[in-house]
Length: 214
Image: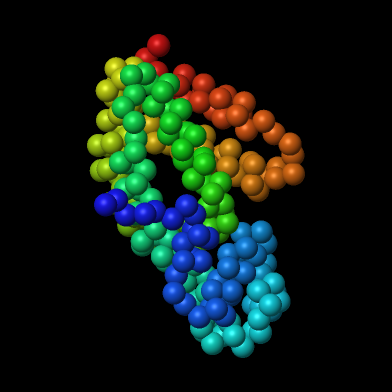
């Protein structure tokens, strides 16, 4: 029987066995770190938002940094590998490059939206925190061969992928569009009304033009 994968990081966190105060602190920190940034969020604000005391936070986490690590470590060490395996196992056979790109773009953008809180924290910390960056490098080192086998292989089978592009270049082209649009929607212009379907269609067109032999 296939292992059930949580719909989102928040769902996963709610399913874990832990004291109520610890869970409240983690959920509150998840919300505030994603909105205000790690440096812009105090433990007092986390406690107030969670409806608990600072003493409760420090009962389970010695420092704010320990609280951050408690949020990110299971994501990087356990959940990302599970999500990766689930994603790779569900990549459909595609007869055209566009079909493959459409699935990769829409699936990964939907994943980021479902996990936007931890994704925003994670993206910031990869750029500013050496420990998080090193954990992510390890994950990417394990993921790169799988990317070549599954994703690059799927694109290659369509017969429409440019021969002069390396797997790394293909990954940058796809991931760049996904991440830049996610950051635009969630960080830069969160209050601006947008037609996501039309925007993703445009991103798909750009990727296909960049990767296609036509």
